[in-house]
Length: 106
Image (tube, rainbow, N blue to C red):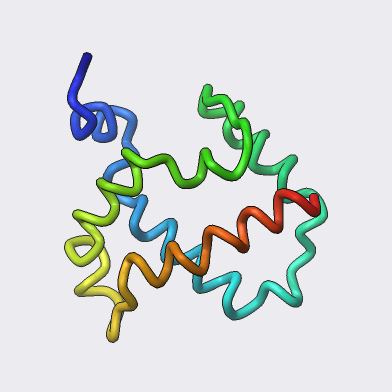
């Protein structure tokens, strides 16, 4: 079995995951009330299919191994880009219930 870091890097996911979580959190925080999220689950499933990934539900957004990696690299990838960077815990803590709700209502 390959180490997690190597697998993430090989798939090209390690570089931008912190930014992805942060960007989704910011977008939903600022615009969720005005976004049409009707096809959100379909879009997630379609993107996963293109990437050759299986999508089972909201927990796939928040896999433990991915979150552990993102937490370790949070400041590295975002610290120079985001003034007053919120903590990883705050962002994930707010983002997780939003994603769960969006998938339940889709």
